[in-house]
Image (cartoon, rainbow, N blue to C red; front, side, top):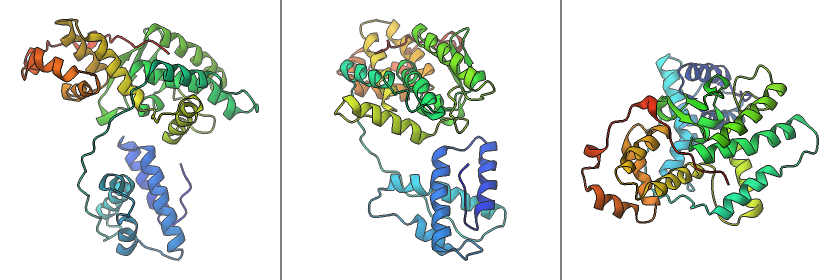
Length: 328
């Protein structure tokens, strides 16, 4: 946990413990709360209590922010103030949540050469200087990003994957820390399973009592910043285009959907398998990827019109065995 220094530090630590116990916490919350604490510490060094001015000044939308980015920054402060109000520790009123702005987001379309170059950069990480940090990075990065690529799981799901949730005998991941707290299962491709076993053997020798599968040398699991920093550095080593780690999930979906075209009725069942393995609570979330596949929207409209949900067969959840994308 970060070191909080303002007069709010005791309440912040209690708040974090409460949210973690409720399974409603993320690293992004802690970082933004840390920035708010630092603002209070530096701007109001002698303050003993939270005031409306402190909160309003910090939560005011900045010129460089759209509604979405502003809410991302201040949301944890809003829920922290609510936490304090519910316990009669303040009478400060939390800011009103801004309306979410619709944005058109087009993820990067990876090419085979780009992916090959990226994984080469992952595999060529240096071994020097000899330190725990360098060693952990060298053994973790190639496996971590290949897992994202080959399984389509979210970056947070991979970061927070626990040892007990990785069945290396059956090759199945139990994803508990998922979007919306909905548990689902992912079957690993044979080549990915082999990599996971090899990584686990080394990680076990370095940290026999580790709780998280991808353990860090200085904390139980890796942060969001670690994922973004490593992906950006290694991607930029050989590629000129812009991409983000989360877009490997988009790539997984579109690659699979492309393989399904022309499969006839099997297309429908495979799409349901894909939806379940990606942890989507509704099929509409998976349908979003149609727009990322050339001509897919036209194909689906011609095939099913508006009756797609009516004709998709029901699938037994335990029988889900998604087809994995091959490694680059």
